[in-house]
Length: 71
Picture 1 (cartoon, rainbow, N blue to C red):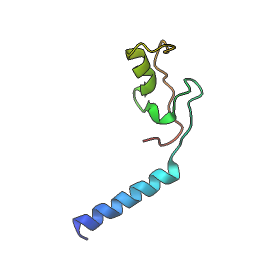
Picture 2: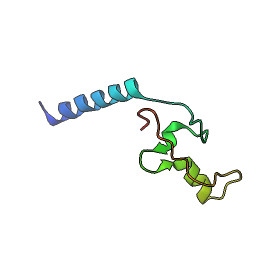
Picture 3: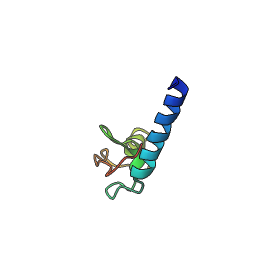
Picture 4: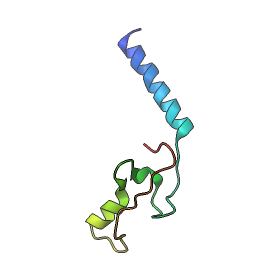
């Protein structure tokens, strides 16, 4: 199998996996999109709001883990 065909096959497999297992929606704790929740760091949107002193920013980063594949 040529490298291009191998890569194309892997790319299609990865896309199909993501479409089957994707999870979208909002976190019930912080109301940010689950796709903002990084596996080891928590909610990146909460961190952004804290760093930029946004009005209504949370005091701490939401530690909730997404219930499925988000990225």
